[in-house]
Length: 90
Image (cartoon, helix red, strand yellow):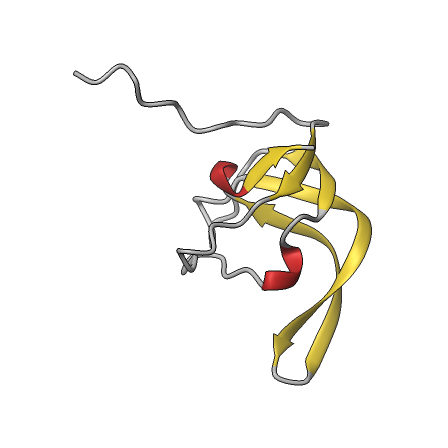
């Protein structure tokens, strides 16, 4: 049995985090946009939604951002769900 494998990071509620997306992997469950990289926010919840069970961490961004959801269609985003490996301490 391997003992050198690190457990996935699990940020606590109220923890300040930075979005750090894996650019080698496109998340099919909860697709992200390049504009989310390095956003800073606070974990507000750690319960996943039914549609994205692998993304339990709801992050409230310090500063809302604008994301392109379809070509030419932009929305302001102030919160987003993430997996633990998509977040890092801020």
